[in-house]
Length: 265
Image 1 (spheres, rainbow, N blue to C red):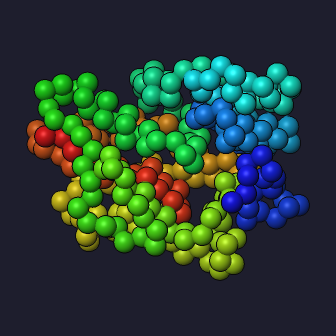
Image 2: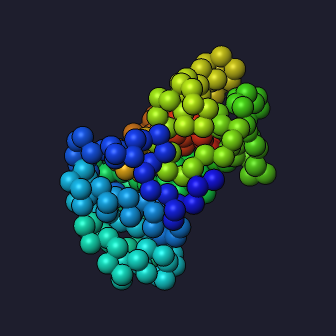
């Protein structure tokens, strides 16, 4: 697997045509989860895009509980001078609670950059929101009763389920193009439609699915729109208001995903 520190041109992108160079990606706040190996690479790629006129943001925020994380060190070296970068020292969940509580209008132009190794933060956030909304109800992550049948999958002890269309190691900077860099053939798969089909055909008792789709935006950096978090919370509030609810929650790219069943009784 390619190391983020060594990765340059995003996989699947011609070396002489950087991703995002043809148009300017304009964002509000971009929140990078983690300031270590992955987060420093994402921040570096956004700085590179910004310096080449391919990316603009009101603010780029890196969240890490380590006050001496790699992004802090690299910022001191002047690595991100083209970015309006701010580092928040704290827990990811606490930051998400504060940020997303601002509401749909405030986060409409914002996005989250997930780390490949982070927990299923979107599911955890929806659980906390449901717990605050219905303090007297039982809320848990239930295991999938039926496998989604992906080429690679693993069930974790905490009920979460991890899936991938890839049975090979993918580089962190892959933009999941229409032609897969690993197989050299067409990428004729995508997690969001596959999971919708799974719920419709195999697990119709599940609600949703609620899908947080991480898509490539610029220079190898994938993002999840913050507005999707707020919309999902409103959906859960409606669906679970009067009845028990079991809904599939998925944080996915085209190729990989973290799944969990949010059960409210």
